[in-house]
Length: 312
Image 1 (tube, helix red, strand yellow):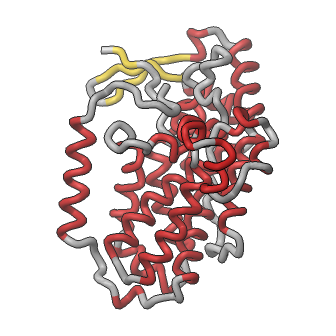
Image 2: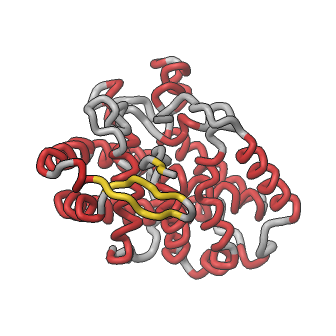
């Protein structure tokens, strides 16, 4: 059987899991024990928001923001308050073109409240999910309406940038970021991350276009075995040369993502009054495990038809 390069799903499962896992090691001593005890939960559930896309109404827009729909400078001008954005742009437009920075800001408040309530299940649930959305905000193609090159004849570039390159080359990346910093202005921080990502869109598309002109399709693509499937994917030579032209861009964005994930977790904890996490249950409850199992079952049974929002 032959499979295509696949649909674009954020950083890809590999990268999302790696980002959440490495973010744990940026935390201070008063947090790291609790988070390390649950590192497998945070790793395994890093991809849960992608699995929910066809199950939960309104999930898809939480992963992206089509900055260019509102104008390339819009990232500096859009309202930082979601109610203000609804009043200015209308909720239909927001849900069509993405809400990722507003989603991260909202979840920071929710995680702070979970720490204040000493609610282990909610802390873990929100930490895993928020890590996913923060990482998505660090992907350039999550900030443009041309999210998969579908408008420029570059369909498939999404999976190339955020899945193929990290899976092939991340073993050589430097992921050292130092301790997670406290964020004085977390809302401004996530918007700055979106702005940085959007500034990279031209190079993401431009370098792929130049390289595609240089290499014919029989060198651009190849076939690899994935389980029982023979998969058509970008060749290793094409991926490596594209990676070289990007000059470390994917590595920098992954490093930014894991630093921000740790920083948002840490900031929420500090703003909650630095509760003693060692006094909390060290593992998710049976109720939480049952909830996750039900969610996984629903996702597996969900229809495969696309949902609105970067579904290509």
